[in-house]
Image (cartoon, rainbow, N blue to C red; front, side, top):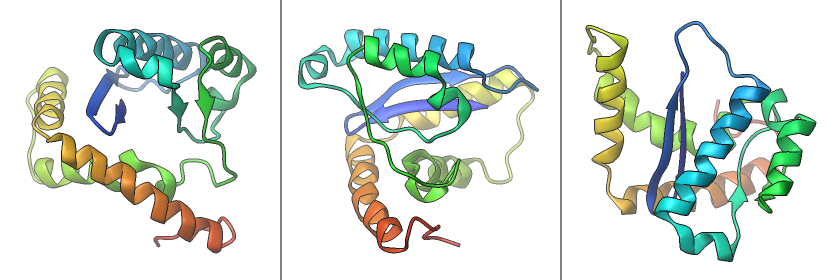
Length: 155
């Protein structure tokens, strides 16, 4: 499993979960710690402007430990009531990973490391305008979902 944090300017952090593991609260909090470090190293200026975190309402994201950590960082959350893992409101699902699916369609890799390297190369090859477009699309998708009573927009 690949977790990617990105903003209008590009990739902030890419994390790979070992095969057959699922994300839990402890792992997610460790990932958020790494994200904070990445922001400090790569986009220090946005720390003073404020961080707005978009994530869904799955347990690792909504757990009290996670919420306490996010408060400790003084980050805001873009909260909305929608189904868990809603692809409509997940820019990584409806924008970023579509590009990966297109690039990797029909390809096979000799090892997990080769696949990880392929993901990293694909993501690093994307221009900043690609990421900005993905964030801009979120606004219209959110409006559609809101006007649809919180139901899925794309079927």
